[in-house]
Image 1: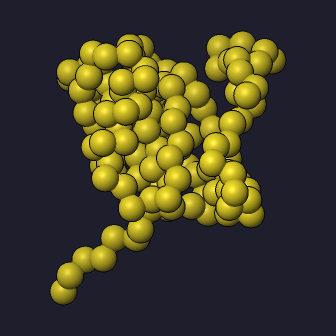
Image 2: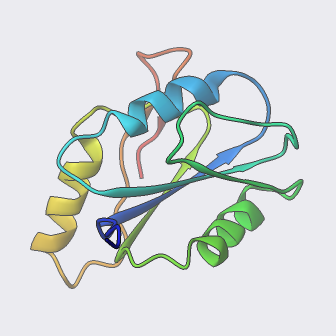
Length: 129
């Protein structure tokens, strides 16, 4: 019997530099509901591992832009959408599903951007598109 994997709806590429914030980031992404994900971490740490078996890891000492590009090349994703995150981002369980819904409602839209609160100072915006 051939195992059929669900087709991912979103490929999530996370740029990991150093530190432990990646753990919260991955936990939040993996807790996403209502969406099929393919998740990659592109890490500057050669020895980086994750307890999430479904998460794929690659190594790169390049900067964030190159890590994102490498993630796209490595995914060969069947997913129609990509979400790029840094390791200091934590998403709500419904964030990626809502993103998918909004992108499907607006097929002419090519890019979505989220309001991002600072993980260490949660009352401050880190970025808002």
